Image (cartoon, rainbow, N blue to C red; front, side, top):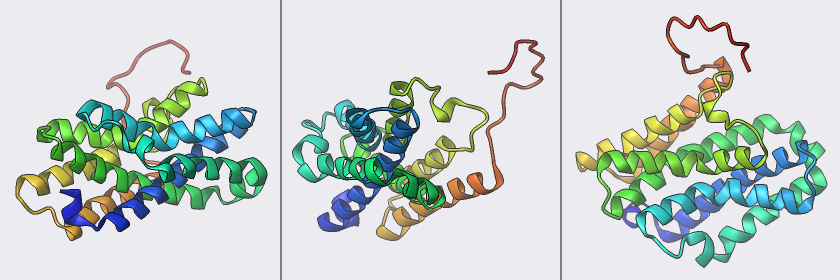
Length: 218
């Protein structure tokens, strides 16, 4: 299905852009945690490739693309090298990095959903793996950095919800046989815009209703 939407070269280019931006966010967290150069490289690789690796293992697309395409493996290392030497400058353009990160979120949730469906999963499972593709690397990054994953924290702007919306739009298009380059791009752009709006207006998911706990908030 992905092959019907975009040419292989376009798919590959979009994948590398998303991988690079996700790797930047992982490398920046490693710098903030005072990791050494190896730690920076590991967090960059895990953040960029973790979600796709999880998806490919689940659907049986082995060996995963990250191990068969050298570009997928080297791109996070390039991002890590950039952050290692220029992290003060990268930090100053953090807003721009966040915008590209949102674009990667939109791209990966759609691509992950379509690939999962291509391998025989039902629509609901495809949405779940589309979400995992988009946010899985970030979860692994936070776990390795000894932090509560961002998408589980109430005090962080919506991240998983935009990916779920994009993945759901994708499976609805698949169900109604309307998945085209235009509709898949629309799904990715919708997730992208929702993420930007969440960052701009600090939209957050609600906590438990009628919360009366006296336990100190973390």
